[in-house]
Length: 236
Image 1 (tube, one colour):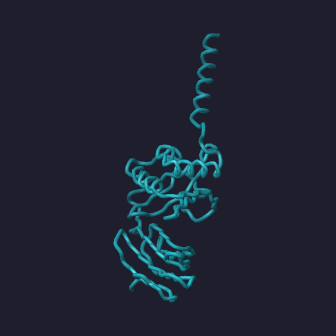
Image 2 (cartoon, helix red, strand yellow; image 1 turned 120 degrees about the vertical axis):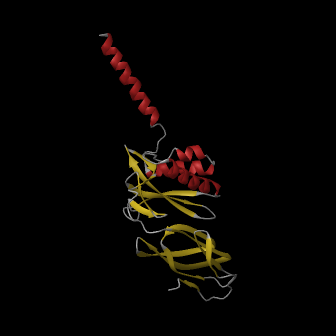
Image 3 (tube, one colour; image 1 turned 60 degrees about the horizontal axis):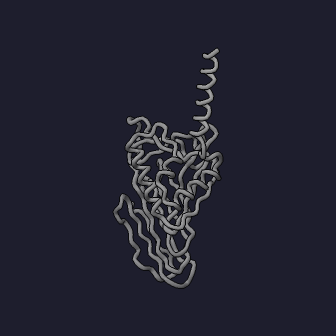
């Protein structure tokens, strides 16, 4: 009889331990976005880290994700929304010559916007809860195209602008549109920037486009006051 009560006590303790473990863990994409926003606005690095799924993430990759968090925490006026997405994020991807994969099935991304930039963080679901996805290294022998960190910076004080850029990813050309005002910054991994075009949609002010690859400036339009488009095209 004592053994029966002992087992019941153990099960009860285990149940409440599990309940405590998942206490406060996001139960919906909107809940995850809300907690990400709260962590960013309070500059709480620990709270932000707790929203990631760390299953299978090696120490070096975890440190890289910590750099990403530090960058996000430095941004100001952050607004965060959850964007459900069926496509667009591949489960495996190439970066820095290595193959990586997300440690959760990706069902959407958290879009964290600030005055300086917009960052998209994939999220997935595990045991009825939602987490920011971690990444794990795939087969080291897998061939991966050499990736570059591509950075676009557009300055146009008191002016609006629009345009597009085309880059290579997994050997395919991907085109993204730009519509913004004052300042725009975008950094992403790719095999190379093929082209970029941007122009003012307002008559006043000036505009400047700077393109970098792996931290090295490869194009600088300087201040451009005319209404003609700034055009960059990779040399053949």
